[in-house]
Image (cartoon, rainbow, N blue to C red; front, side, top):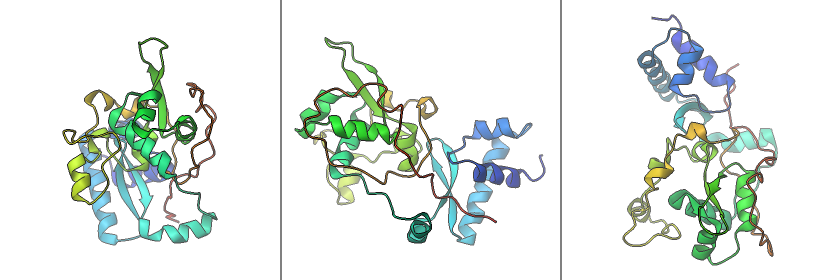
Length: 241
């Protein structure tokens, strides 16, 4: 058994801005077995909860990450300056459609929403919440879109299977996700739950900004639209000093 395994793992979690998977931790801590790493993570999570301090150990995007507790975000915003604007309703609707129906074409999104989505797709790709998964093998070979690992991190999901079903959303009193029907439980397609490690993503906070849809943007966003992402704040991290 490795001495100070919990302390080693805690230092690794503190030193990174993105969730760390168990296999990544095993590679960093030579000789550590996956079972021992998971047990150490469970003990750390329990200790943070018992302490009730300003941060906790979150499970997101298939990994573990230290995050500040939501009730302390107002003070963090004061430290960091003005908070970024939230995503618009149009952006959230588009994101929900892609999350539940991926891989999906722009034409399918626009058919559901009834408006042009070019500007919103560009915004969500700049935020690294969406990515181009390829092209559909039909005439014109249109681009198809899916969510990224950043999306899972932002909404604290282990994987796409953690997306709430239509019934769960309705039980909570929420609105039905756009494009779903009475016979649709709202679950993501099985082929959409690919390993999030394969998604190109840059670590960051939960989505915190947005703009209204751009008018007259008829051109299809290109696959390299997200090559120069807009600057993003890193996730809130605890100060252990």
